[in-house]
Every structure is written in structure tokens, then in C-alpha cells.
Length: 231
Image (cartoon, rainbow, N blue to C red):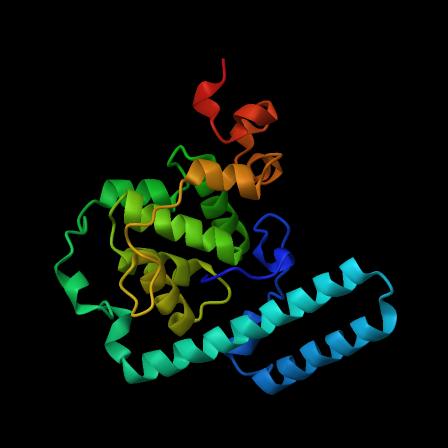
């Protein structure tokens, strides 16, 4: 959730993640084993790939995977020394931020995937159905909740933790604080990502939205991310 990574790991509609977190969180798959597996993948890539572009894509994907492992360990370290961060912002000035703590109706609209923004609704419905959600899409729904609806990140954290199979409270806490702008090394609060342009970039053919928001499946592609423009 923070920074540019490999294309295969960043494309929210295509996957490219290992989906190993439910096991990794419970230490059935240790970090050293994951690191060794990544190293083996790099070695195999060197031996078998003759196409330079394919080889570079594999190398970039493995590096992104290792980077995310490091970010997870950083989250554990930070939460160990700041256990209050499950409920309180790491930046103390955010304690006085005027969040809409009691706007339960708007929170429910978001939680049920009925916001009217196709990429947001598709993501929420995928999450509720499968228990998985790609990193970039998590960033978008978190930003929408905190920066468009001004609903506190703690509500979003609890919702995701209740639904994702990779319910890692340390990583998710740090991710939500990073997106909301109250992490010590946060995505600036004033930077707002447009869900329409995000959808057009991440899902240009509308396949992801049409899969999870079937009421839009019959729309021409040009209207999928802006259905209100359809004649």
C-alpha cells in the first residue's frame, strides 16, 4: 500500500499476489522460507528465460514480494512499540480531527457496496464474497472512506479485519493509518485519489466492475465507471 511496485503485483484486476498471508500470519510459512522461495524463483528465472522482458517482469515481481515482506515486519515492529495504534493515530494532531464518528448510515452504504462508485462497490463486494482484496484496491476503498466520507479509519479497519482471510491486525492498522494520513510516514491527507480515474486506469475494460457489480454488466464499456452518463 505504499509506493510503486511491480506491475503484476500492482494490477488490482489481475492478481499477482501470493495469497499466502493467512498461513504466513500463523507462522506456518516462515519469512525465511518465503525468502528462500523467492530466491529460487529468481534463480529459475535466470536459467529458463531467454526473453529479456519476461525475465525483467519476474525479477520485478519477486522484488515487490520481498518488499512487502519487509513492510509486514516493519508493521510488527512499529505496533510492538506503539500498541495504542490499534485505536489511536500515530500522529497526535489527528486526535482532534473532526471525523464523522456517528454517521452509521453512510458507513453502511460503504460496507454494503452501494456507494454508486463502481470500482468501490465492486471491491467491497469482492471482499465480502471471497475474503481477498488486492493491495491497490484496498488503498482505494480506504481512501474513499476516510477522505471522501470522512469516516474514521478505525471503522474501516474493523470491517476489513472481520472480512479478509489475511486478517493481520498489525499490517492493516498501519495500512489504514498510512492511507488516512495519520501514520508517521503517511500518504498526505490532502492527496485524494479520484475513484473514477482510478477505475479507468486499473480496470480499463470494465471487466472487474462487471463481474462484481452485475447490475452494470450490460452497460457499454465507456459507461461502466461513469454509469450516470449512460443514456
